[in-house]
Each structure stands twice: as structure tokens, then as C-alpha cells.
Image 1: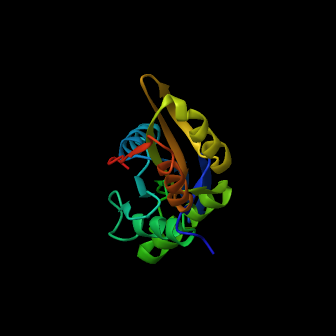
Image 2: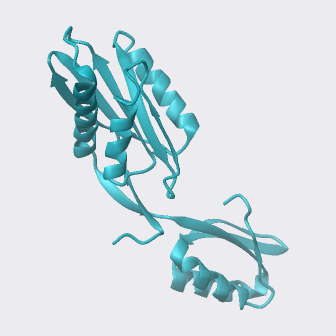
Length: 204
């Protein structure tokens, strides 16, 4: 059972190759976090495989798995991007881009043949990948006066959030990151410290 604050992704690029009737399908799975990263990868691989017949892809972004796209790059509609995306979905992955490059071997595969080939190539790349489970983390910034530093540090030590940054001027501040399910407890404890006030980070 996966909690709502975990998601699965891959740790590093991986590759898979599938051949069918002399057509060669090279699948590359890449860990990505943003659309900009995806654009850079697509440009890179389109240049690298400039002589290929098709460079199709699908991606999924975000822990909620709501940001996705499938692209057939000139293959018959639904025969390339969709099967690639289907593999991302059936493996419950996100923050992933899978590019499948096709070199045409002279024999037409037909729509069902293409679907099988793109699906198989994507599956090969995923099979070669290292899949990890990550937690969905949230950030919180707390401001406090210097004399209450020890109280804050005690909470940090016990709850073990990651310290993203800290500054100790007239007013001290600390930005912490912790797994989403543990955030309410952390916030509640920080709020009890005298002079502490929590800044709500709207960006997250």
C-alpha cells in the first residue's frame, strides 16, 4: 500500500531496445522534474537521432501524477505516445520522460504492431531502470527570537526535518522540509515555542 505522500520514480537514465521486423526501437527513460528539462532532453535526443524515422515520447510529472503528455511524432495517432504513457502508468511512475526512437526497417508493422513495439520498448527501458520510492515533502519557515533557539533546535533534533536554510540576525529564521504526513505535528510543535511564528510558503 502506498501512502499519499510517496511516489515512485527512477534514479538515473536507462535504455531498452526492441526490434520487430527489422524496425529498431530504442527507448530511453530519463528522470525529470520540470517541463524545461523535458524540452532540453527532447532537443538533445532529436539531434542525436536526427536520422531516425520517429522520436516519440511520453512523460509524467509531479507526485499527484496529473501533469502528463504523450506524443506520437508522426506515427499513426495513439500508436506510440499512448503505449509509452501506458507503461509509465502501469508502473505507477512519475517525474519520468520516456523517449522511443524508431528506425524503420522497411516492413510496415501496422497499428497493432506499432502499439506492441512502443509498449515493449518502453517496458524494456523501465525494466533496466532503478526505481525508488520518494516521499512528498513540504517546506515550512519559522521565525523566532534568538533566546528560543534551543527550543527550536530540540524540536528539529526530535522530528528530524531537513534544514534548508537558517539565518540568525535580529530575528532568527529557519526553513525546514519534512515528509507531508509529518508536517502537522512539526508545525504544531513549532507554534508552541514562544515568539515563534510560521510563515506560510505560498509557492509550495
